[in-house]
Image 1: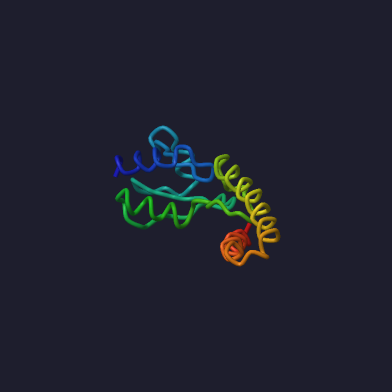
Image 2 (image 1 turned 90 degrees about the vertical axis):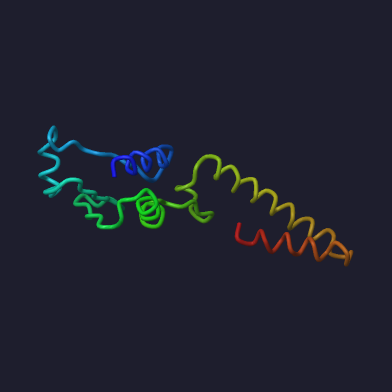
Length: 130
């Protein structure tokens, strides 16, 4: 399990929403006692400001840990609320908003030409979520 945990930490090293860490209970027994750790290895996760944490009881393979982390803990980038987005994702969202405004202008401009109007309408509809 140690290798899977280290791999998971590497996978989420640059994440803005997930921190993978560990505590050596032989050194930091107070921390472990405070959080109810009674056996080893123990995995706990904390989300949305939870100070108590929840015990993780899923699989211990890299695939199981990664799946749980992605599905339960990772904050995905959302166009409507980009605070969970990376700088690269935020830049892409802004670029798409500009492109969509252009697509809207193109749609309004070329709507008289039936050959191009259909393509412009598709581009405009794809941008509706932005």
